[in-house]
Image (tube, rainbow, N blue to C red; front, side, top):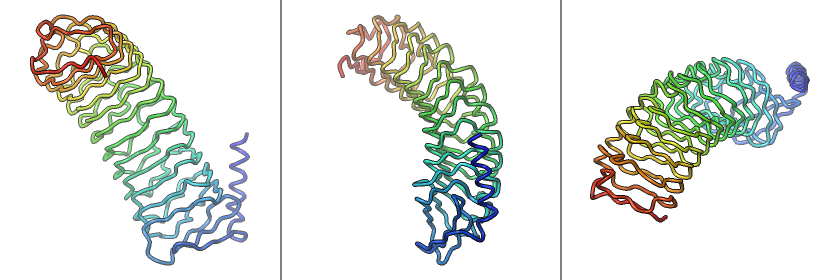
Length: 340
């Protein structure tokens, strides 16, 4: 009912905005608005940045931007933008960066379709709890997408279609409990994925299918309880994996199969008490493993077999206080730290 009332308010404002709008001029632009609706923005001189703040905006009238030449648009501080229609961002042919942080934007299909040159989209702190399929249609050049600090409860297939060049995706600090298999399959160029500070309890098979260029994955501060065989699937370019501050108790055999390029593995501040034989099998290039602040009391014989590049293992604050390098097949040149 509240959202319906807000929509009615916005529609009334759109009808009357032309005759009763308030206009201000600053930094080379004339900005007009009425009852929370941005109705018109015109440009007096060549500028590449426009910041519209402290107007308590609720919406943007389709066509409000009058063929601006700006590359950067900021609409965050002191606004509460919620209702946006398709066409809200027409008239911005050169825009490469759009910041809508600290609003309450409701995402809809084709919302950004006119922004064909956009490279960075920021929607931090928007209370987003749903991403409809088609939301990012037309954003073929976007490389940075910030969706952190929202209320997203799950990740589903087709959420991220329309983003063929995406390199960096921030989904941390949401309420994500489940990630459906294949949800990221369209993101062939993705380099870094942030899923930390969520509520994920398990990583389902094929969760990361298609991420053949992913180099860094963050799943810190979730609720993972174990790492089954081939947990992360095949991520041939992954170099850094962060899974600190979970509830992981067991690392199963071949848990990291498919991560042949991994160099840094973080598993600190978990509840690890069991590391099964061959748990680290396949990590032929790994250089550093962080296992401090767990409950490790023993290691299987040969558990580090094949890890010829390993330099450092951090084991501080575990029950285990000494490792026989020969029995676990650690290179003699490697270093094990038992204190922080």
